[in-house]
Image (cartoon, rainbow, N blue to C red; front, top):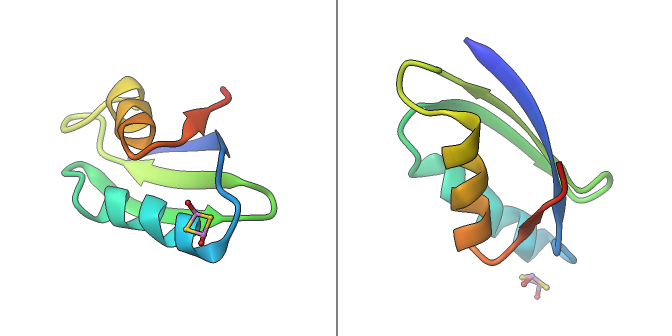
Length: 69
Ligand code: 9UX
């Protein structure tokens, strides 16, 4: 299992946080995701056999947010 912290720009309320959480819920390979507004980030545990960081970041961008790292 791998863990990555992704800094997310564009989350301005808890609705946004829930939107990002929903993205991870439907993403195969993401095992656990802790999304917070302050700081605006997601700490993600994922299985590198099923998904990579670029794919995780792409899903966040597809949902309308920006990845800062
Ligand atoms: Mo809150 Mo986020 O009303 O796009 S859901 S700003």
